[in-house]
Length: 111
Length: 112
Image 1: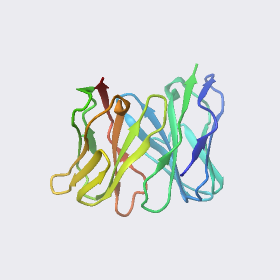
Image 2: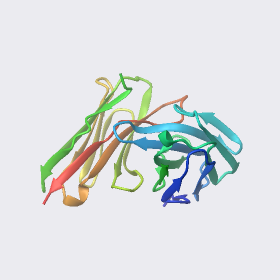
Image 3: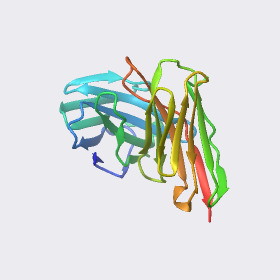
């Protein structure tokens, strides 16, 4: 079974802090994704990566950056956290046209 | 207009009922269609995955894709209280965009 592990289930940070969300997958997938999920808005793509050190912006990249130094790890960075970034963050991985597999999410609160 | 439309519910049914969940979409480039189930405070879990048009069955679950009408469905037979969750449809283009486009999810409640 594919396993996607997100480092924290719950996180509370303050406005202006730099926040790191980590994601690791164990299936040698080349594609990795970061989404945020908000009530009524569904899942929205922030960034994705199709190879080590490669990244592409998704639909809502503003205020975020990403890092992929190793194939199994994909990090999401909030450069200067703001209250409107309070959300559920979901990481996913996939290979080719196969479906994406998700982690259990990080519920992030920015105070 | 959203690319993928999904009724948010909630949909409440008695145990044992047949449940029908649906999504419509506007992008004719979508070729891959998925249904995910998401329990509260958990990540989405893949239920069904189909390519192009047709039906696929897996136990109590049947997925249907009608590309001519741009309409997909998930049927759950003999629904159980453990099926209570949010169901998300998702779609992917055949080439080009690698990411999925999601519906906003339908919340299902199966009453014992």
